[in-house]
Image 1 (cartoon, helix red, strand yellow):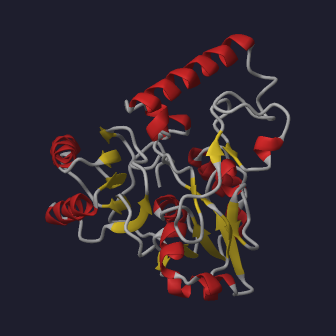
Image 2 (cartoon, rainbow, N blue to C red):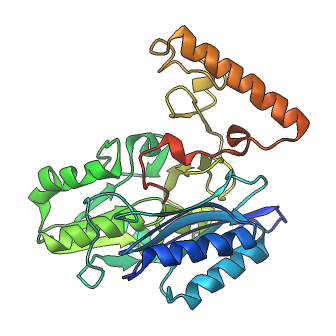
Length: 319
């Protein structure tokens, strides 16, 4: 992690663990996070907890200590830094799943895939008999992935179940190595895959974020940037804010080159969505952008100024 002092620490975490009374925990978590002046999103279910929060380092540490006190001793946590607060508010939600895929919570005592630490991931990818799968959505894989990874080109993680049932099902006896942003999507998928008879399933422990945190750049096999579900939009190999911004017209990440194409207008549209947006919607976007700029000039917080980004993407996808 960058040794320079920055204002905010971002913690992404999850744990599949049986929770008897998720609403009680959610209420407590909301109070704790608010008292520590944290912002972000936490999802709690009978199958566990999943969240990303940002705040000053002491507040983040106190929150992690609290989670351990609640029994989350195997919490899968990744840290990165941000010079600006990447969330607008603190939200704690109770849902059926901590990551949407099966429309039902999994049995956390059942068999799952094998976790592979970042330091051993390059060796796994180098094996000839491994089928390497990027389980993330198409808009995420479009800006970065590992070399030779298979991209399912799904629009939402809920579509990954169908990909398993129709494509991967033919390779149940092969070694399947999966990765995602923080590890939770792969872990959820591995529970299901072991349940239906896959023999050898492994996943990158802690996901891409942990790999970028632990692996030196000269040893890294990561190409491009990693999409994140907050106001930073993406992070680079150093876990610094990346070069992409979000198109407010179609909610897809935009590169510097994308912003030079016809149809791009900041906070309004890009070349991919300009023809699909009505003049009415474009004018609304322009007015919203104007109001945001006024708020920034006056030092007033705004959802779009501070980057409340999760509402633009499939629900329950924060890691």
